[in-house]
Structure formats: C-alpha cells, structure tokens
Image 1 (spheres, rainbow, N blue to C red):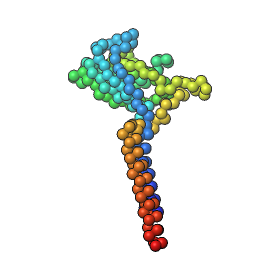
Image 2: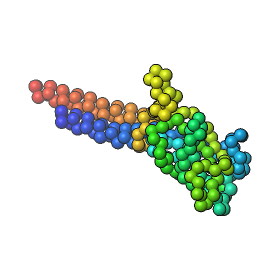
Image 3: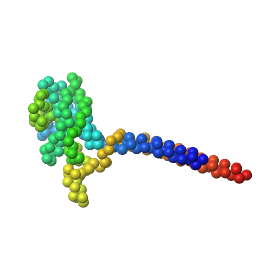
Image 4: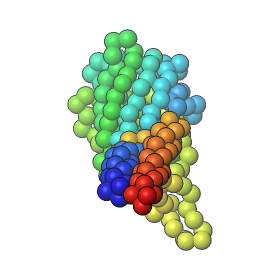
Length: 208
C-alpha cells in the first residue's frame, strides 16, 4: 500500500512540472496602435492595430489594418525610450494588398532595459542606407513602464525589472488552469485517502 501511495505522489509531481514550466512566463504588454497627434505625420489617420511586446521572449508582434501597401519603401517597427529619444528596431515589413499587417519581429539589444514606452511604425526607403528612424511616422502607441524606479533601492530606470520575472514558456495560469490543478490535487488526495483506508482495513482483517 505504501508503494501505491508513493506512486500516486510521483504522478502528482509528474503532472504538475510540465504545467508549471509551460505557464511560467512574463505577460506580453498589449499596446493599441493609432494615429498619434503631434507625432504621426504619414499615412492614413484611420489606420489602427495592436502590438504585443514581450520582454521575456525579446519579441514584438503587430497586427494592423488600414495601412497601404508600399512601393519602394518599407514599414519599420520601433521600440522607443521617449525620455532619451532612443530607438530599437524590430525589423521591416510591408502591408498586404488589403491594407492588413501581421508581423512578428525580434528585439535585439534590449540590454536588460525595461523602460521603453512607445511602439511606432515609420516608413523607410528600400534600400535604406540610414539605420536611424526616418521622419515619416505612421501609427504608434504609448504604454506604461513595466515598473517604475524604486526610491528605496535607488535603482535607475535602466535597472528596473519587469513585475513578473521574464522566463520562457507559455502564458500565466488562468482560471481554467487553477480549476484543473484543484481537480488534480483532489483526485490524488482522494486516492491516497483510499489507499490508507484500504491498508487499515486490511490490517484489521489480518488481525482477526
């Protein structure tokens, strides 16, 4: 009976480890993209979209609509630290013929900084001899810093860490995951209780 109880406990660990590993991850920040008065100056003002910025995966994905397909130029996606006017390119792409965009880019050179606060698209010549952003700015969106500098620790904006430590894997556990974990634990604990009860009953029968 003890062996069966041990096997049940091992089964719990085996079931929980993949789930925990798959769910330990930072939450991507969703940024709404639209025409930014005072900053955007190129392209349709009714274009819109959404960007998902993931520091954990060093990636950003953009889905947009209303952007004209370019000829002789390309859109370039930028992550910007507006307080320092520093930009980080996440790659170039073009819109589809129907004006839609579904682009996934990689963020090289984050340097453990999490104080970026702006996603914006620019229109760049193709080929592009200048690595800096052009002055033709399309839709973009501001988002809050992941975590403000801490006066208690004296950390600078460049040293701040995300509220959830960046790790690879899937999304953070949701309600469904919690329910599944509860059912799993309930099933296993119930099984252990049955094993203990059967063991006691067996010992009583043997004494008779």
